[in-house]
Image 1 (tube, rainbow, N blue to C red):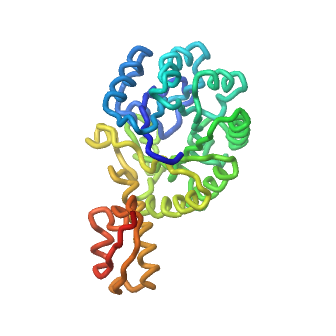
Image 2 (tube, rainbow, N blue to C red):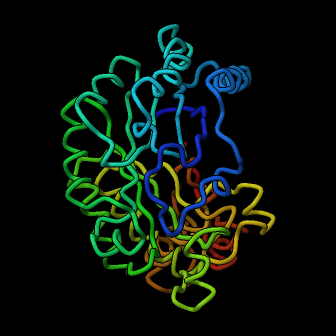
Image 3 (cartoon, rainbow, N blue to C red):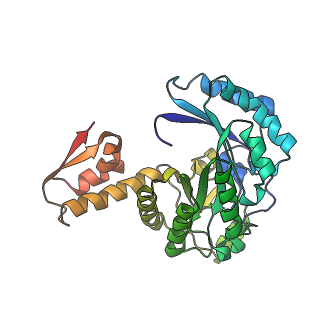
Length: 319
């Protein structure tokens, strides 16, 4: 999960999803209202390859639905488009996201034959009460069993999580993170729960039965989660939802901790704490602080927040 790489995203919103999770409207989140055909998938791949640097590794990624919930025949209609790019060397591998209750030996054997290397499971929470509340339709035990099977077949495992779901707490979120590590994930994604239009959660929010996290609380939770995953060498592929047109315009977004630069806000907050600790709590102290080149923007801070907060700090960029 290291080095320069780019993902070619193929969104298949809510494809083969057997349940309607209370928070979910994948058409709004993905920013598209239809599922691409296999021939359109080829066009998407070609368009991306024409603009991506040749020296970067590349993966084709199927997002937004439960890929392995489709029949093997339908999965292969998509994989048969993507796999030749792996065989030719134009793309390094294929990844996909799916549900833990849609993992079987037969499915994994087929994916292995089609160049898939990474399988991400939408765990969302690893607390059974939270999973039941949001109508997720699977249990923590099913996530554990699917994770074990995926790793047994030699795939890289990703486990996605959400924070601020109904019934969630910071303590439960940290427990979910610990279980993600225990289940052997090499990567994760952290999505703050938003109230999105045309979801069951909309009604709960409007009736006062659900209160989303504030932006400040979501940043605080994610600071600790990110630090934990770093300690465990688990790559955080994303924090925060992709800013689709519907979320940006407010057409689909009703409430919750949404920000176009959510990851930057979290990393800015982490660097804030790090700098303050180096200054022994004195924000006006003078110091020269070494910063890896790839983290200088976070050290300076979103909107130069840390530079403003610590006016007498000089950052020494390490290349």
